[in-house]
Image 1 (tube, one colour):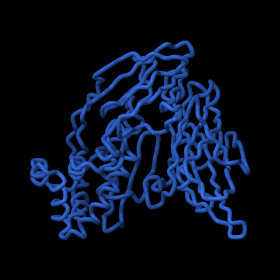
Image 2 (tube, one colour):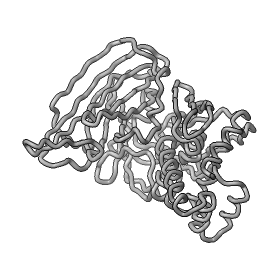
Image 3 (tube, helix red, strand yellow):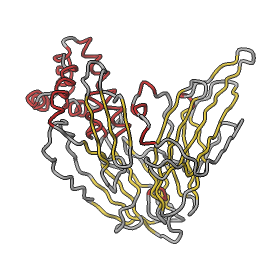
Image 4 (cartoon, helix red, strand yellow):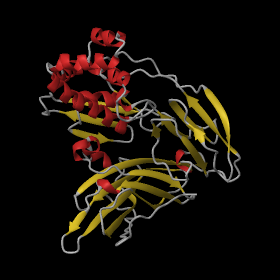
Length: 418
């Protein structure tokens, strides 16, 4: 049922296996480029799928229009070339490479290619093992890269990589979040004799992050499903399931297990922010309480948000620039930090929106460490986000808050409000 379209030809496929070669620990690499949109030109998507007890398949999808396609004046043809390289390690802290390979793809075209490029390759993984998969995609003509990390906890039959998602035309879906009503088909391969899986739905509203100096522990989020239903399987596939309202949709083979596969339905145009109510809510990091309460009481939310930006910008021209910059960061926060709720509401999203992309980022298996300093006048400050063991998402991080960040926060906000 997998609709795999090979749009390009392979000029070279170069594979090399590093065995257990030693390398610099991933935790010692500055990974600030992961969150710097000015350095990102390509946004490939990946889906890992456990093919067998000893291997997994990495499917990928790349927008060909994001790749630089070079024209040859003599032949009047266009060339396209990119590589996908991976390194498989046991953890961010491990010095040993379990496996690695580089796949080189190229094509010569009569006209610039449009549409998406789909393909896949195998990676050796063993059941009951945990891995970190680093995938680097390089546009060879532009000399620009995109890096993705995939956490793998390979169970016998229950974890998220035993599930695949398709649309009603049998095309594989790589997205995990959606912005409108959509029918999806879930494929589960963990148990060949399974006749059903379970679907838990969650339709809660979650609060936004509080400033980094608010050290009072927030109320624990009690994420409980409001509905549990059985979903029949036929040859491993469900019937089309319509995501008819906003919320969290979690599929499991066993409801007593913490493992499962989760997809999300957010507001229209997500990850962008275009709805006035959402524009108002996401501006909360810059508003005073009185300003925010006044805006929420106005019937015309678009007028309220426009007046706010003009008021802090001092002119319509500066307000337009502030709006462009601010909501671009909100959109980026949604792309990078979406967890069980919108990315802009998370601790990392809050810091990213107000301070901008961090100067340095160091990742470990349990935390991310961000530093700022010397950027647009922002004073030196450090933030540590600890990973939360959240069965719904592997992208949930909580900020270690400190009273020492108060001055830095107010200064960063004041830059927006000058």
